[in-house]
Amino acid sequence: MDTHDSPAPTLEEIWRLFKETDRQFKETDRQFKEIALQFKETDRQFKETDLRFKETDRQFKETDRQFKETDRRFKETDRQFKETDRRFRETDKKIGELGNRLGEFVEGFVKPSVTRLFQERGILVHKTYSDVSASNPELDLATQIDLLLINGDVCVLIEVKSKLDIDDVNEHIERMNKFKRLFPEYADKKTYGAVTAMVIPDEVGKYAYRKGFFVIAQKGEMTVILNDNKFRPATW
View 1 (cartoon, rainbow, N blue to C red):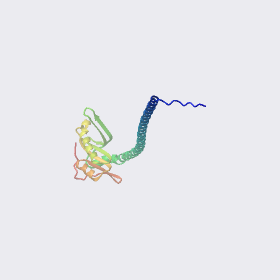
View 2 (tube, rainbow, N blue to C red):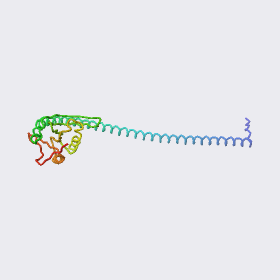
View 3 (cartoon, rainbow, N blue to C red):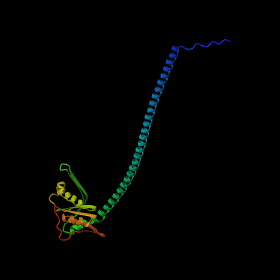
View 4 (cartoon, helix red, strand yellow):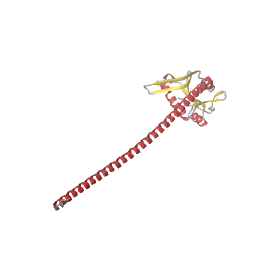
């Protein structure tokens, strides 16, 4: 059998093959670099997405914390509201009970005896009126008198409290100053003031005394005027 060898490639063919191989190598290298760039971009996007996820997770946790804090504050506010409402109800109850006691004090002790007490002091009042009020919009004045004692020449204005304090005495002075402007029918009467209460601290009683008021107090089962014989009442 004859053997025919293939002709050896020429120099030009070798060069052409070399150039093609080099081109393919460069193209492969370019594709590899492009893939590497894409990988880096994908990795950057992944890290950015991870960062955003972590930030979103942080914000979610912060929002959840704020929600829980708001819910805690709401529950605390609701608890305080209920506690305040309970205290208001207790206060209303105590005020109601105090009002009842004050009414009993006035009707049971003060009102039945004040006419006699002032008559014993030479002030011959004989009529007693409760809860007397008046207002005059033109003068911008208004007042309310717990007990008003009168006769032909004299008026006595009595302020009644559960516990007397200095502000009550000062307010009664203002009431005395307004009386004749609001009750002009008594403008020519000699007018005295008095204060009474279920509880009268010593310093407040002395203050009322110095301001010229009769001080009426309960002693045991009796109602008495505490002012001594040296007392000279103020007149309005």
